[in-house]
Image (tube, rainbow, N blue to C red; front, side, top):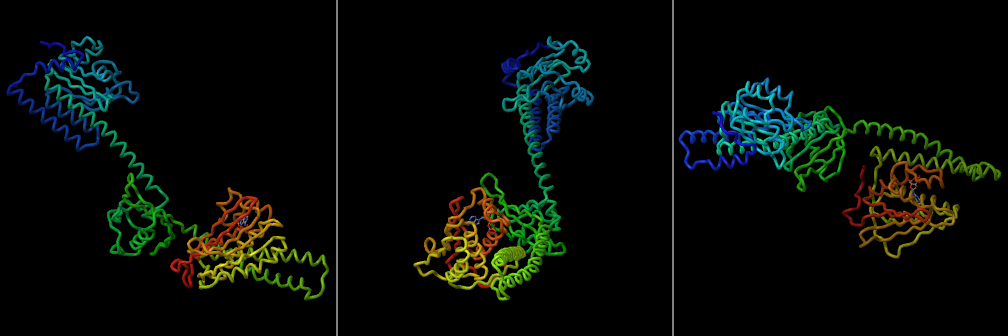
Length: 563
Ligand code: ADP
């Protein structure tokens, strides 16, 4: 006898079932309930252990099907366009049927599962073959598959319907309260598992993407945790350091790790840069000679530091090219300097009429040649200094002394030059007795000359250049100020003035001669004196350059040092 339809509204029938619920259950029913409980326990285990959603759902379906004694249990998933449903996992059903369902999805709103998923309302019937809403074309199929009782539940996750679950009985079947509650719990579990699996897969995809990116980087990457243990070592790091990730990851890089040249490199690199975001160069030991630029980057999770990264950039080629270029410039400059100096002295003698008198026109022409030759000598000297700085051969010999004498001498040297350009050129003597500082007179002379030369060069006739020496704030530093009322540096060009060969547009217009190397060399020299070069400038108003030297003996550069 077919039983009465349990109604299109599951909640009503759920209430009906609850009303019918007996306080005492028979021994047989008790055993069945125990079986269902253990099924529930099993399904929750899959959730905890598995992340493959299809596997989880297949196992849930199988367990539930067995425990209920149902013919089929299946899960329905949305098609990509969300307009249809297909069977994503099932127990008891043939593979061919599942495949058929994938190829011929059920339209949303059609038949029981389509309605349940569309409305989000569970639905149960004791005999689906008597369901008036069953499409007529379906009846033969249902009959052929031979099932009657059907319970269908939506899978809901955070108010979103993500699919459906159906239970099919071979015979007519009146769904009891306990069974329905259990099916409901399983459906909820399945929904949770499905969304967790999506989340997990998204995370996995992200992780794989990040891993692929890290592996394909041109830079070597070593990540350490806070205990100094390597947690990541990418392919490029393997190539650079000739070590294998499988040997390195998990190792704490400490003194004891220095087994050979390769491990020693790793140890040295880890201890090379301590400051965050700072970088240093490192030349590898062992058969593969590389020059690396090692950067130290902190790794943070939210606000907490969880480790740090060493980024290794192979700069061997760049360094080689730089060295070759520097050598070429160095050799060429050396070769040029001697003849240019010879020309200078010859012209000097001619101009002084040591070899006989010359007329005014000849004198004027020779003075022009003399000036051009002087410019060439300055250019050659700048190039030579630049190449020595780049090659690390710009040696310093620091001695304690009074800088005022040096500045005064340079001031005297520039007087004629300033006078020729009708520039008011003065030096303000300090009222205080200035303390001695540690400096290399030859190198610092180059720096000071560059700044004074610029202030005269970039000031129009009638303008002024003023030099002064004084103590800085708190008497902690000594300041050399060179102020001019010249053309100034355009605001947008100010950030480039220490870059090699850079010259601002207004400077080129006023003075075609200039290498753009003076400030680069000056900055290098001042920094080697542990000092700083500061400036303030306004276009068409003038510039003030300040050279600042430390007075604290701890901060003063010490003795002879070759860079
Ligand atoms: P150079 O003087 O040979 O061009 P520098 O390296 O000495 O090269 O200076 C770089 C640039 O900085 C100059 O070309 C000029 O544009 C700007 N500059 C430097 N000093 C001054 C100054 N006192 N007044 C105006 N511009 C200056």
